[in-house]
Image (cartoon, rainbow, N blue to C red; front, side, top):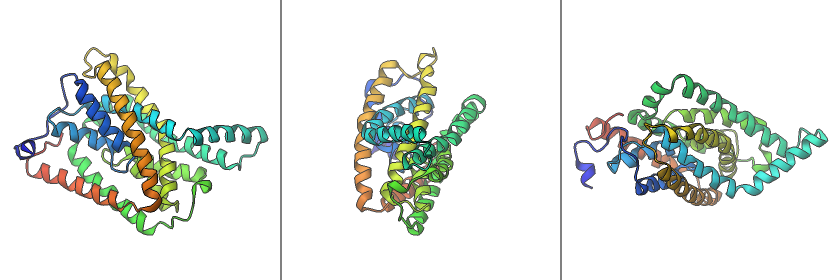
Length: 294
């Protein structure tokens, strides 16, 4: 615990290439937190700097998310195949009320807001956004803020609608909520699950649809950063990136498997309390001088 008692245990972004062990550890952290409503971005920043490795940065964070895509596609392959077959059948029959077509349409429409805003950030506001996105203060505040909304959704949500009732309007609502994930500490899965609960989905359905909605967004985010691997000034080595992606894939699959089964019989309060504790710890560390707001 010596790192925690030091006057300053958080440092700025890493300037040296990540080692293989560091990449694997960060990949595991990313995978375990990507699909839980606790913000993978926040944990992928905080955990490495606590270990005195430095902030791994936006590029590595986005790239290791590709491992999560492998995991979620593997886990939901039957659902994805059913959706694709259902969409083809609906188009052939011009049956646009088909449940599979409506769900797929919801995912497509719901992905648009975060993609558009993400492109604006990447090509127009990247430098300023990266400073904002790695702000410990923002992460602490938003961790608590979303916890409050998730708690309200847990209390007020009717949770009467199952997976077969999901349609395009759920995709639109959860898609708008998903765009909030561009704010550090919000959590893509957290914001979408919260929106799903507010719209009356049961917990397991909100989680499943949230995970499916994440496939396009996470894939686009990871692919958009791949070119950074080949930049001369990049601190992300190719071998380390591959190791991180593999570690992320394995840990993501474990997290998905656990989350779906957990929410069948449990509430989301454990995530609410965890987020509040996590956020308060960050704010206390900043106020006491043990953490830099960088």
